[in-house]
Length: 304
Image (tube, rainbow, N blue to C red; front, side, top):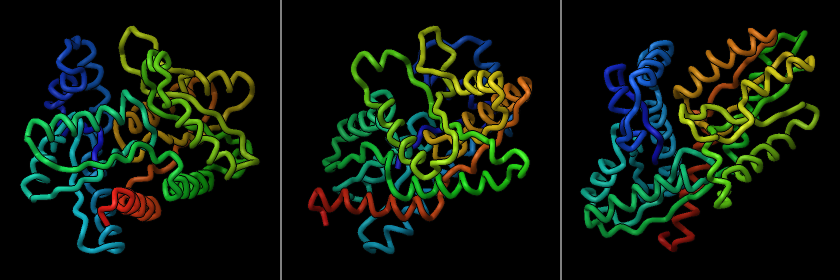
């Protein structure tokens, strides 16, 4: 089980950012801005703990389905415990068959595929002879969609009755550079598939899709930006929004700062109100479904 990673404390942020940027220089102003954001959300990322909880949930489901054939390991792309550390532990356990699952439902060569490459490079570096099966995408996984639906319904219940009927759903996902479109990367289509599946479950609710969390870089990134979209809708008389971050399944700075602080302040300043659904986390609906997906992947490889 692989996830992005995040700093454990404020003192880790600069080293973390250098890892994210692949060693490329980052300005002091950019570091200071990221430090400020983490200060506002508690000084650290909760992503590791939430991913470990997901791993425990997946392990429990796999043990129900087929004990004791599966063991779940966690590796982070940009922080500790790293993917190489997880692979080293897997090799030390004399495991010879591996299902690779990224905790990001939508495939892109610039996101999910990078995890797989890091995994393959580590296997080569360790001369580890381990067969690997990739779960490329789980954009329409039933448990993932069921969890989002349940959390949307719960979120709508938290909105005052006077405005709930006119509250629009805003689906969001992490933006990527526009350059991915030049090689027909499937990322936008992957996201649209999830949006369509959720829209079919809320046929009477107005919905929108937008990107969030574009990097502080000069190159153009995919849009529209979710904050700009909501402000534009406010000018048209639509003032209440429930944000549904379909591209994320756990809390991180993109959720706790970008949505809960930056978007909320931007929308409020424009005269609107914003709420956010609870993140999927280790919801048993999703973990049970991912357990079935992992087991089916192993069966497809004729490992079971």
